[in-house]
Image (tube, rainbow, N blue to C red):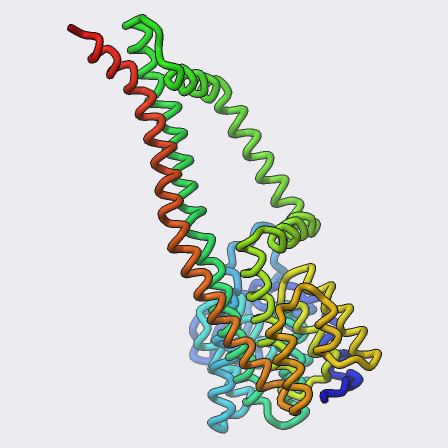
Length: 417
């Protein structure tokens, strides 16, 4: 049976206060006399000069970057994963941490991330530990900081960095599988919508003018399509403006509030097929993260909190907060989870076996692998069903419009002696 352990200072170390860093633009010379222009983050201009001097750069001018549109390449999750993977490999080979950071900084192709690595290296050289230096940057999540801290405390930083990289790689594979299930139908439906709009706005009016010249009563389907086309042409700019306003409103609500995400999360647990997929993907994320954190020696309650956040689903986060409170009150993890309808029976049974046998980490890893495969198979099955369905929808939309436009011509041909 796994007994809950009270969180120690790892949790507080993960929430270190962040200095108010600013970005400075500088010009200077390297040790070889080569001119260089770049950017660096620091609290003050003097601190920026000191950091640059430590890197062997003599500054001729330095100024704070003005606020405005930033065209920096965003830091992607693959950049973070590759960073941890390279560090783990070099540390396990006996390379000192600061030297490993220098090498990863040189290998990074992302300017913004190079600056972050440089800042971390400077902080470590100034006496800070790796966890504290990394915690100053929002690019690293709490899970990574907690594992780094645990690695430094136990003297197994290379092992922990390897766990972080492996964990993020597995989550990235799962995320890409989920994206795959939605990208294809959305792309095809978007193309179908554009093609239909072009037919209604450009092609149908040409047929309408021809039919007006011929005279006679048109079939009902043709009249309906022509009426819809006339309305679309007359109000095209108002419709586009309305679509633009809706998109902006959705983006605003998504950025400023959680209403859109909350709505999507709630809907995902009500739709028949999506419901099962959501539960399996959340179970895979949760199990993988809990296995990584608890196996690294992080207290169970802290590991549960980090694992809840990794599901990225409001309903699961709230449910796991309640489960964490019950575990803190003395209940077994499997017993607390069995009282929620969000978790599938298999994960509860496997956790129960893991608690009784003392092999909770191994059982969680098996659960994560199982649900990863289940998600992959379900996505493949959905894709194979979605493709013909979309083809039928596309055929009905485009083919229906074309058929409605040619019906009067067929009637004329039949009525001609």
